[in-house]
Amino acid sequence: MARRTKGEGSVSIWKGATSPGQKFRARRTIELPNGTKKVVYGYGRNKTEAIADRKLREQIEINKVPIAETITVAQLMTKWLHSKKVQSLKAKSLHDYALQLRVHIKPVIGDKLVTEVTFEDLQAIQFGLVAEGKMRTAQVVTIRLKTMWKYAMKLYRKQIADGTVKLIDIAEDLDHVKALSKNRRKRIWSTDELKRFMAIARGDYDKGTSLYYPLLFTAASTGLRRGELIGLRWDNVIPTHIYVREQFVIYDGKLHKETPKTEAGHRDIPISAELYEVLVSHRERIERHARFTGNLREDNPLVFPSFNGQPILPRNITRCLDTVCERAEVPRITLHELRKFFTSHITKKLAENGNYSPKIVQHLLGHSTPGVALSVYTKVIQEDLDKATLNLEFEK
Picture 1 (cartoon, rainbow, N blue to C red):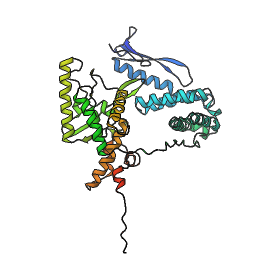
Picture 2 (cartoon, rainbow, N blue to C red):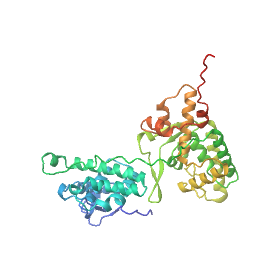
Picture 3 (cartoon, rainbow, N blue to C red):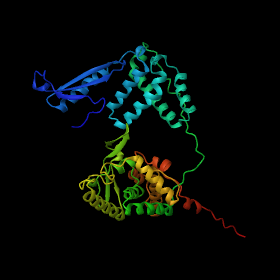
């Protein structure tokens, strides 16, 4: 029987039922916007109906809006997070938002009434994070503050309009936090460096000491994200394409299966015959390993399982990358930078073949707009930069 996680609630047959529609009762304790906790029940003919009824009753309780003069920032945070749940935000995004609010905002202004918070209070949160050198955290927390105050303005729009509530969007004028320059330009590996790297990884794979070579080869050949690689299943691989339909994300120290974050993430990626051959050979190795040790199931749906048959942990991929980079004597990179390698080289190849289109690269990477690939993922290839000379032949 699967163990329930904290906050999930419970569902059981209800002994006090007086009709078939109350056979099951779902129970969960929620935190209301006023900071208090309340047990909410839902009922139904089966577990699914009971949970759906409970969720509806939860939303009714949460939507009881306190007046602006009495709502604290902590209460506003709770309501704002629940509004994000209504928008069907992914579980990892909700987890990250809640963590940022709980750690960086609530301790500073959580007990203050929303109408009492000043622009200087919000700046103090920014300045504190910047002083600690947490530039990226300062950036995302600023975004959360801006979004949360816009939500408050929307929540109390009617009261603001009729003058019963004095509330202004004090977060609107918060400056964007610019990340500090690292004073170094990340360059993309050359094809020779990639070959040296892959040769070391292939050697470890052939010796049976590592299972990472096919994953790394796929990353460089397709630009798949880390979670998409870890969650790739055999039923989404055919000789000509890989279908991206699900991924693994990590939060709370555990891997969680999710669908892609955006509609653009659901995509079909063409693959080479060479890559498909690597994957088929890898599947045969997994099956042999399963028969020999019993650790791996022969019917394992994952393309890249660990030696024990479970999904590969991201930190183990990082260790492998660090080790192989050092032995191959190439600049250290992350798995995400192999995605940038793919983007830069596929862009070059498409341009050389005369069929480059930003929309093609956008589809391959699963981005919502083509500009992300051009501005963030496409990097200068050093060997191409070295050839970028202009020979001016003036008459002598």
